[in-house]
Image (cartoon, rainbow, N blue to C red):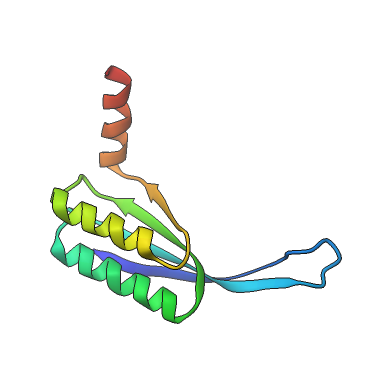
Length: 105
């Protein structure tokens, strides 16, 4: 399941004197379950909505055991094509398994 998790107002000074301000929205999107075409479409819609709202950042919380390889590549391409940075946080049993496996190699 993919959910638009939250929106946050983000603001900060670009210059030390406070003259230039940067404001925007950060979207937090959550993907749970296996990676498939439905998840790809939902992610693409969330990225489109974030772009329409002029988001400055998307935080993707990923809780998945994996899934279709080609669909994963398409999701990565969509994130790379986004007009803002996409930060991915991988969590859940799939992430723990991957860390354990990496240590064993």
